[in-house]
Image 1: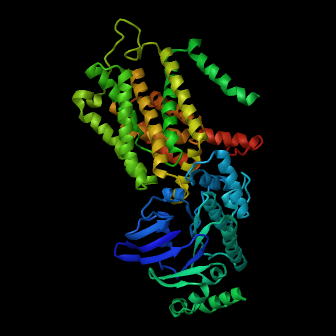
Image 2: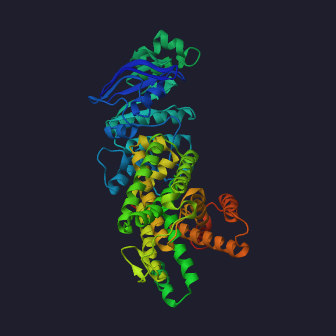
Image 3: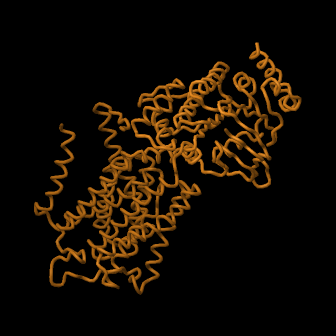
Length: 252
Length: 330
């Protein structure tokens, strides 16, 4: 479905992403992991059209999308969330999501349809859809959900979920993970999930790509990646043990 | 119901006022309130959606001067002059807007770019003094030597005619405001003004939407300039272009309230009364006194009454009666 080939991005003399390549099959949940500053978010921005790559290609459903403008990428069926939520604070939750439904699809729906789709997206992430529900009332977990609802309302084929789950407690993290799995299962949306805490992600992803210093250092099933010496080295002293436990728990 | 009929009754009363034999001066003031109300409304159409322009003096100036120069130099009727002015305004608005919106020049930087635009327009008018009359201004050649009105030259000696012409444009301005207000584009532009990148990520074509609303606002302002020139039969670079008038527009709108439909018109009445009051009170002794007072009051309004006179008044009334949150209707 998505095929990234030799993708690079340099900012001045700094190489944020260095010739990375990976493939994504339809219906997959791919975990894109790596420590802070490893190039995950840049990769995301490149795919979503927020940044133009310095080099390389991104093919989505057989079509070159590298360098395509963000709003166009959305119309092609790629939606994204932001690591730090970026809600439209002065609009209601409903308006936030309805805008995405109205403008985010290749064929513009009627307003009635956009509102119906927004309602559905809000329901999917368990947020209220009354006009009176405001962004101000939401906590960290609620804002993450709003990001998801807004992305889903564009009726994407591919969801780029920048879910750094920092700021959430453990049960909220698990809920977020389950929600992504549910979105894939119910809506048939293919997902790339960016995360730097590996444990929670390992429970639901089908496959992982591990980045470090802008390069792919490992790729494969969660259990093999978690025991890969290079990955363990990158995460050493952080949560390698925990990750291996999580993967073991998933098999059991 | 009472509330749905009230605007029409008010409008009918307003339309009858000139026929009640009020003097020339009050009628002139009323016309000026409607004319500037129309111009301020035009400004607000983009201003309230996060694009604060100090460049509308340029569009006003183009509207006024192109029409007057076309008539004086080439005998071109305003009926042809206005379309030319509109075309020129569209070109200028595009040349200034497109790069700004494409490269995300927003907020203060956008204000600065547009500020330069209105000043450049004023300087061009002054520099072309052989054609424009420079800083002394210009008077359209009169077509009223033997008659009291000329439709071809768009000159009418009777103020009552002007009152109705300008009333129509003012109503049109309010109608455009309503249409923009009810459109999805308004909601999208509000979203853009809060989170531009996130707006693009959900498929909103930021550049196109911003450019669209800028065009509407600029073209309406250009017509305002032409109306001003034809009504006053005198144009001056200071009164239709440059920083002064651009600042006055922003001040008027903020004073009146830019988030309510009649706010800009209330602002126009307020600025006009203020200017007339200062003129009558102090004469022309203190040059630029009005600009100084505008600047000072602008600061005070932004701090103490950010919603403007009408916005604050409506809020106060809303608190007394039942609070009615206005949901976005489809």
